Image (cartoon, one colour):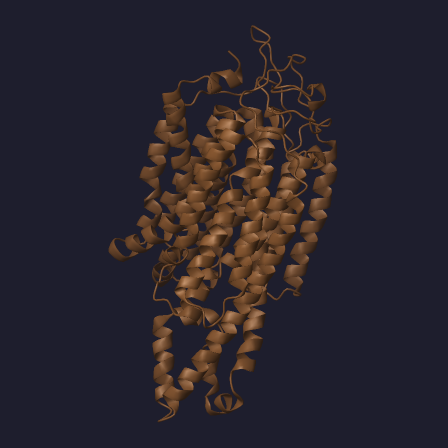
Length: 579
């Protein structure tokens, strides 16, 4: 039995158990990104080190994002079971250590370990679907996986808040241990141990240069306008270093026998369009939607104190739509029109959000979030799936991880760019919207407290501010109301500008998606001819297979202990392969 057959020909019950373990592991990794935020004020109060607050999130994000493309390639070379189980184990280790942290620096270091585990899980989970199911069946599971991320974005803050209030902040990390243990036990017991018997050459220089390019790039966009100005020596230096390392990485990959990120991928039109659309969509969506809780609570004045509850309408519509689209894709096999329609709906939703102002209501915000969620739900299951469908099976892991990598980098860049825009616009509009007589009558220290728009979410700060104005005399509360109106107006204008930029980026993604070529989703795997024993896979000839509905391939055994390739070069595939 071949490698792929040993997995794809498992019984239905076994496949369901494999996917149950995979989904649980993915949920644990996804929730770990959202559950910590609500506990951080309590963590800082106990451990101190507020000046290092952002590193708790930055360290996790940088390590997890950098790990994804590297692990994706390694799973193609050495099998996915070991890496998925290893990712869960590393994340559990990091979680246990985080829970035992005695200082903020320890917590940051242990969060990086968590990030390595989470990145490994995410790089592997979507490729496991490709091992277990052909593309048409895979679509249904891709929709469920999109729902897992949506559920984690809501459940994480809720669970984190409950644990922090009723137990101890350390249990925010310890809760990963039982979840991870169940996922490991289920997955280990049912997933076959499969790996290529080819001789592989690990691209050590590629790994090194990728790390040297990605880490400073992510740090620059994480720190810009928060830790340092955009034109500071630190940010320009990091971006320059990242650019130089990126150029060297590209040169190294052109000569590597088995590159970590094969340059030939970018000559494949389906992969290229999918990567660009994924990058732009993440930039526009994450960069603007991250300000939805601030708008709903700071501008509209909603009493919700949990960001998970604020964005729940969007996440529910996303999950439902993703599940429906997954079923439709699995039955229909066509994806281009769904991708274009989904991006059009998302762009329309972003336009509606850009029209919100200080007079908007919760009902209007909810409607707009639902529209955006429907658009996102329609496209989230698609682009990983179409890339898997278009490329050879031997590139399943690296191509899947590459799409996830571009999503993470796009989101990081979007948040930085939108954040800079919101802060700059807010500061300018706050001055413009506050009447001159109010500025002259208000002590500077009171106005200074509102320079950070997040202050609108802090009930204690607002109470103190109100008391400060009340101490000014009879006109104090009148001044307070005028200042708060100016502040909310300025914030609504700043966030609306971010939504408008997000709409523009989404529109660019929509235009690019029109060029997405369509290869109907394969219902079975193709089986190629075996290649030379002991050969090293060569991706240099990678190109699209015109008209093929199943470029994903199943390695063919040669008998005995002979090594086989994980798939042919696409030049060897006939236009009808996989039919």
